[in-house]
Image 1 (cartoon, rainbow, N blue to C red):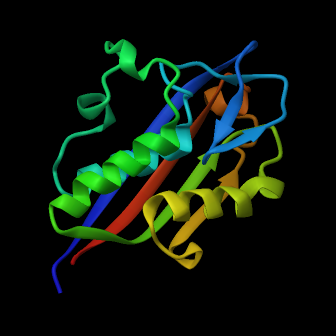
Image 2: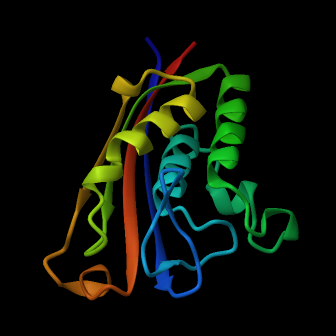
Image 3: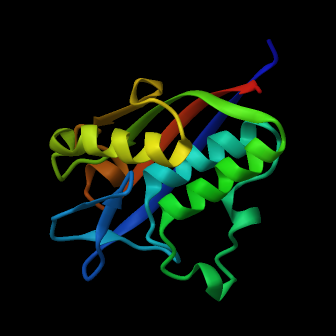
Length: 159
């Protein structure tokens, strides 16, 4: 079996006046993430992991923030485009493991919905998509509530 591993990382600053969207889920909270698209750090890290597994660059290459077409873009729609790219190359996602680093808000009530949305966009079973959340014990920019980061690892297999 031909397999590839990819790793992704993304970070966005928290700000007032924006929606907080993580893994395609809009979370009711006082702040949101600043970015050209919807700034969904979790989905961005997953897309970068998938693209990286095949050495296809990153989301900035495929969906540049200099292109007005992607202003306010729905990251789940962009994830579906990434899946179309790798499918055309003859690959599929075997599994995703991801972690969100955020001091607040509490994310555990939203994890299942994130997994469902991500699995549907990827075209795989929910059992193939892991989403975890952690704080950084008030350390660093995430611990101080300045931003949220996410990491993701994926395994792709040849179709």
